[in-house]
Image 1 (cartoon, helix red, strand yellow):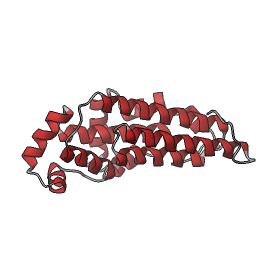
Image 2: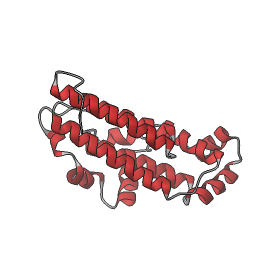
Image 3: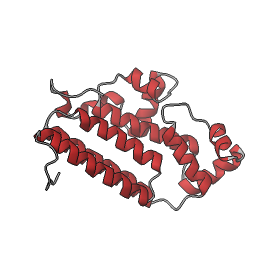
Image 4: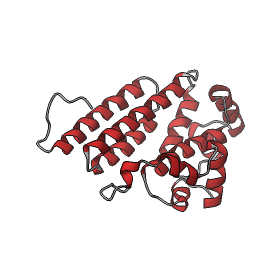
Length: 201
């Protein structure tokens, strides 16, 4: 994190401030670039919360880099997709805002005032996948963040993301990612977060 101005006499806090300012700018640029606001702000809230709890400069920088990579990957996905119609955009915003709830096609159809079958067809034409698959993909992306940056149990993650059970979550995760949640955590969990002074989600 490049710093020209010291915002605090506490060096770690100074890094936190600059990191949060940087994330705010990245969030705004991504929204202007086409990322749904709900998704951008949800990601920002997640990383800012982790930065607020960071106790070392190395950890702040690691979280900053992880956030930038996360935003870049998601923006690349957005840029590779055609411009969405208003109903589909509203669906995307609804999905990001209700990630911790069970979301059905009927819920989304009611939200955008369209027949479920028509909305399903429209979504698939514009997004290249079914609504069901898209919702699961986004939940799995969120689960990967939880596995990487927290010590939440698989049961907790399954419950937070409204999977029907822990076994269902593990089954979907393994199918989508190619490894089990346990294998993913063992290979991706941030080593610096495992120290005794590491923050908890």
